[in-house]
Image (cartoon, rainbow, N blue to C red; front, side, top):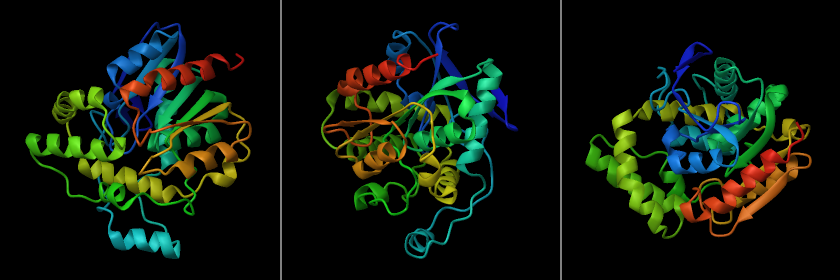
Length: 293
């Protein structure tokens, strides 16, 4: 556990302590173990000290309080009237958490890899603390521009469903959710879903925390204008069939950040399926190792 920014973050490391640090930031309502153990190990084998952690309000990190579940009325007001939602905290606060984790670990700067909301946090960190970021890899994420295409109806519905209460309900929901997000059949991943869902359930669910994280995203607004001046070496990875953060979001992110490289992965949805790891891990490692020290 690391005490940071008034809270505690649960974290885990892989690889040699003196290797180049690479910090993995997970997405909305997602525990750190969704960065699969084997994914972290393979990245560590590429010469990195890999750090994964539970964001605030999820897993075994500090759970906050306050805020109400997001309503469809609020979403419509945000979409059509531009009225911002209220939030207990914003993405900047979550970026501050990460800086505190780096301080706890004695790391002056690290490579950042963020998935979905994690990519948004990584972008915010690179904007607010450029000296702490060696490189940025933004995966299936967005600039926060409200004019980008919205999620498919099926994917959007995942965000507003009432939470499951029993282990069996959670396992069924987990399998259904990832079937929608992966877009297609991925037997290697599907074979791990039950065990992973059981592990997540055992570590502790916090549906209210996921709701506060969603509010944080919506209340933080667009980073597009600020990203136009970002100097951090950036790689953008996005799937061509992402139903939640649409492919246009990845293309815009890469087009907005000066010098950013875009890698669109054919057939990838809002997930990083095991068969695509060689391509994804290889790109992350090559990008980070290619940055001048």
